[in-house]
Structure formats: structure tokens, C-alpha cells
Image 1: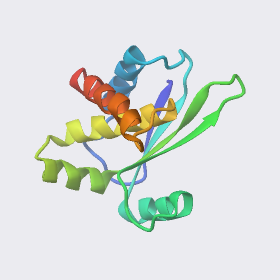
Image 2: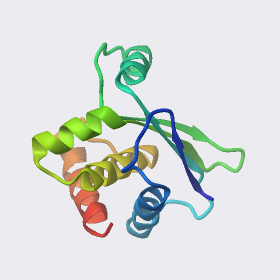
Image 3: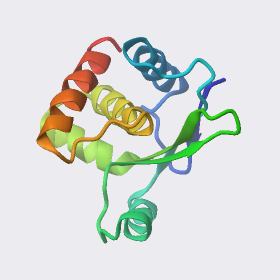
Length: 138
């Protein structure tokens, strides 16, 4: 399977089917390679804070991190680490179904692996609508 889900915490709403659907839809709306390999890992808040501190220098919990690498075939493979408790909290605050928030975070991580960014307004103007398009088709 080109995308795999690993749970390090209880994450009932984050299913293999949801992750696979987001992956499939993302590939439909982007130029993701056919043999792209991605792992999605659900973690808790302490692990996410540790990863965010180590890799971004930010000592706080975040919702999703993407770790890209290039496979031996030159493909942009990678890992997406998703903080499940943070997703639950954000869904409540946004008054969204948890499934929608999870789909958004997986799509967000996948787009980062493909080189999309949102730090600059011009980049966000490209990435945000694409996220919306993907989630609306999940």
C-alpha cells in the first residue's frame, strides 16, 4: 500500500480508509508520483511537542509535521506525524466533524511533502485552496 497508517495513541476516527481516501484525492489534484510512499503516524501531545522542539525549534504542540525524503528512485517519499489530541481539540474549536479536521491535516501534510508551503501569502494562496479542494472531495 502506498500510504500506511501507524497509531502510537488511540485514534479511532483516524482510519486506514480515511487516510487512503485523502491520499487518493490528493494524487488526483496534484502531480504526486504514481509510486509515492507515505506513512502517517498518529502521536500524542508530549511526543508531538518533543518533535516540534527538535525539528522546528518550537517548544509547543503542533497539529501536523511532515518529514520528507527522496527515495532511491528520486521520489518525494516521507512521513506525516499527526497529533491526534490536537486534532480533536481543533475540531471542537472550529466546530467541525473530527473526520474533516483529520482529512485536512493529512492533506496538509501530503501537500508539504510535495513541496507546497504556506509561510508566505503567495504560497498560502496556492496551498489553502488546494487543501479545501481535496477535503471537499474526501
